[in-house]
Length: 604
Ligand code: FUB
Ligand code: ZN
Image (spheres, rainbow, N blue to C red):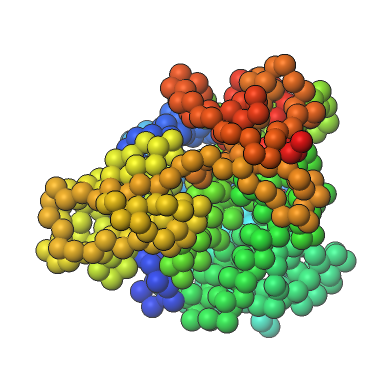
């Protein structure tokens, strides 16, 4: 198993040197999370999540579908039409995991699975184990068939595999498939688009990996083809598919939330690689509208069960919130690309919000159970009328299992989101005990964040030249200080000098609990308060408040909030108390059995 080419393992999104952009991602192995909340979650992903995910792909027959397509087994393919994508997300997770912690067995497992995927590929590069068998042909119903969606996830896994392991086995499959797409789709060829985006960002990344310009051109065509009636021509209402308005004219997000944010992430990739500043600016406008009008306090995206969709502005019900875990992941991908492109701290704030709340709630402390839907309220005696409803508690897998392997791939690559470089500077975006090699320096971050606001940056190796270290000061961190001097919230505080090994910087972020208000147009939360401490949104859970029915509970407007460090609870947390009610971080709810829960409480 000798890698065909040894390389520096680039991050999941690696813009080319000529791409528009302010910040550069650092290689995936140039940062390591070494302790704290995130290391615990990452290690459970290693020890439990990824292995159990592989087993679930066998039980749910996703892998058997490939055996059938490869001619190793007989039968009908099982599962949803996009069953292949779960295998590819798992392969991507396994690849990033290998970069983090090289393990021969994990490498063998992914290469064995890669060989099976390769044998399932048609001679002309087409690859899908479900659609031809079930629909009798290819691309007949692209709005629903997810053929490009599955191709996109395959390409992302292939890029991860070659970057993380040096093996190009899956990359060769991806190139054959992408060449087939280039030969089949585009102007003057088949002018059709997949109902579910992701191929856009995947093709741009394949262009970045291989230098083949045709992949970028096709990605740009897929982005620009939307909004011109293609999906309507199939007889579909276009809103659900982000196909009502052209991407470069849309002023907000609408329709199916995961589709919308994946499309936007891919459009940013296209914009930065083609120097399309107008498109980039429009995607910033869309992000702004989404954040202002369509995002839950937890960072959750998508408020409608119907169509798993964004609602109208300020339509943000708490009990019927959808807030799919995959939508938070796509939101993080979009925000990350905008952060690289613009260097604006607000996008790193958004990544932190979604990571620690809307995303992390999707995963149990054990690391093997998942929420698909992340509501902000579960009522007393709620009836679980759907597999996805949070009243079930987290489940080990789903008939539609998009979220679990998506969580695995993000956790396995999480260190890639911690820091970036720019000329002569390093930016630290996310605070966790970690080691970062960037800008010619080696830095150690010591902190108990997000429980404690002290973050110590220790220079272990200094570059020969002066270096600027930019520290993100979250927008909520009024009163933050660097080495005792006040710094402005909502920006980066720069510390610049000729560092020497042993130098330290002390960042202090105030974590006093805050009671925040919703926008008055959000009927479901009008007159309520949510409890927030630093980046963490809190939730009131029945198990902690056995003497009240939370649906009846309220607090006083000027209630004092008390905090208690609880090292033995839920892996070690800071619990809060307000108006006689106890709250824990939202992402940890439902780890002690089913319970009622709410984030917003009315003011009495
Ligand atoms: O369609 C594929 C995935 O299934 C979507 O991204 C999720 O929202 C779920 O519908
Ligand atoms: Zn999902």
